Length: 208
Ligand SMILES: C[S@@+](CC[C@H](N)C(=O)[O-])C[C@H]1O[C@@H](n2cnc3c(N)ncnc32)[C@H](O)[C@@H]1O
Image 1 (cartoon, rainbow, N blue to C red):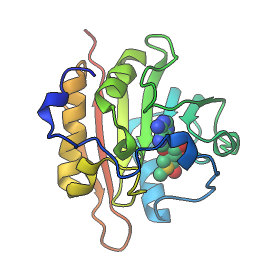
Image 2 (cartoon, helix red, strand yellow; image 1 turned 90 degrees about the horizontal axis):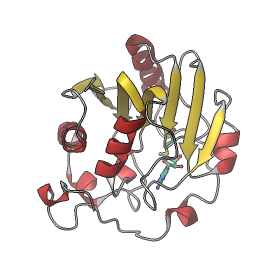
Image 3 (cartoon, protein in one colour; image 1 turned 90 degrees about the vertical axis):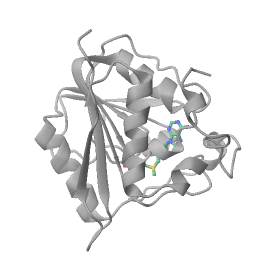
Image 4 (cartoon, rainbow, N blue to C red; image 1 turned 45 degrees about the horizontal axis):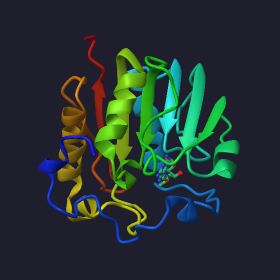
């Protein structure tokens, strides 16, 4: 385990279903995990931030939510059929980040990395965030978005105990503990009145 986990109480990263993620994600789910307004807001955020170069969508499925497809989009997730159905994707990688948080990409491969409604499933987030930092080019952003919905048996116990604001703080702590990022920006994009809430936490890879 990477250092940093001693900042969290025992059991924080446990899940009520600790079985192999490959079992849970074997059936494809060609569904949306947040409502249409929240999906549009994710796309609006990516456009506002200018996420349009060589991009990795981490923990992806059949949709990546961009208003316009990036120049080159790599999608990484658990289900090959879902990734195959992702019309924006140029490259597809099936990879279990909970079995192996190390990413197969070279240092400084991507302009930006995004992760939508999935950070709550990571049992080794500090290693994953450190890996994202490694594969980003200096100045590249890691953009995490999430709502208040999840597969509760697969989300970490710590996530389930927190409210939306505390979850933004938690993702900010992941950036701090992984190291090599600017201070995270925390942005409540939708407050949950009339649609699903949509929270964003993102930070930039430091140059040195
Ligand atoms: C709620 S879905 C979100 C999918 C997509 N990002 C979206 O916005 O619709 C959670 C995604 O996380 C991925 N995932 C869950 N556990 C994972 C793991 N251990 N390693 C890699 N990806 C994982 C699954 O493949 C699934 O597509």
